[in-house]
Image (tube, rainbow, N blue to C red):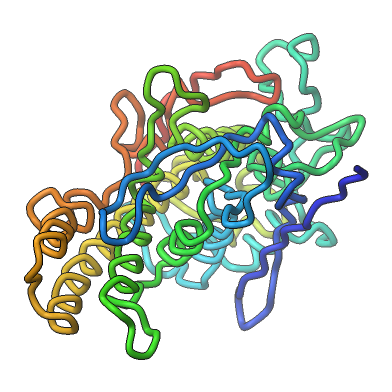
Length: 378
């Protein structure tokens, strides 16, 4: 089958209501994703609404339409980062560093048609291409803007150009096919929205609300999933960390190569009180930890609301099965409690979430591990 895929372009608001967009390439869906051996599958909610949460893996010989091909690292995350970086609050200092002017973010980092846009030149995607002291980023020979290089490393399935981008074996493995309801709830949390405590459907039954609650709680169980001995696939959070650390690597290389303090837009650059060189990598490190922490706080508040909302709507459980579900969901350590609605924690990395400075998850374009240390603090 000739597969062209579904194009994924994310637009976002920026600076005086103008719009920018990132092209994240194409991704397979449906039966095409089912047939791709590079994509881990199928992550689903075990049992039914009355029995609890629990993420398991099933193997289907034929495509099952209740599953979606998930960019484990949400493409909206990078859009949110650049929108924050260029939101115009450059007069507000973060630690010892002032954020850049929106014009600098737009014209130097993102707009390819800008005469000031900076293109990082790092060709090569094979170990044989490596030059001394140069990290392979698989750029075209004349370079690429950093948003496009960042997009190389996320989950994608589009045909590979002859001279640049990461090979498909490195990008397709960042997908996972997960039950559609879990994927939809994941997008809500990563969009920094708080779900309703219970289903908004009119006259929703207790089972509808049980399913609503467990499919939201399952987002965190899914992201923390590790295969048991004998199961295929890898830990889901590894997929997220690979992409985040690719972003960290790209920004690290930009920081080292960009001619800070030169050119017509130098006065619009980020600036440090100690006059040291600015660092986009440091901005990302600050932001991504705050971003993930804020999602956890939202989930914690949602868990409180879900318990209160369920009890108010349906009363305390009376039958044995109802009591068992309630305990599984809301008792100490239950699947819909704040203790469970957390992202994995990782030791030995710059970030508690393993989001940057993670030498076990930082790979160059050839798939070789790179140790770039930790970013400086803002």
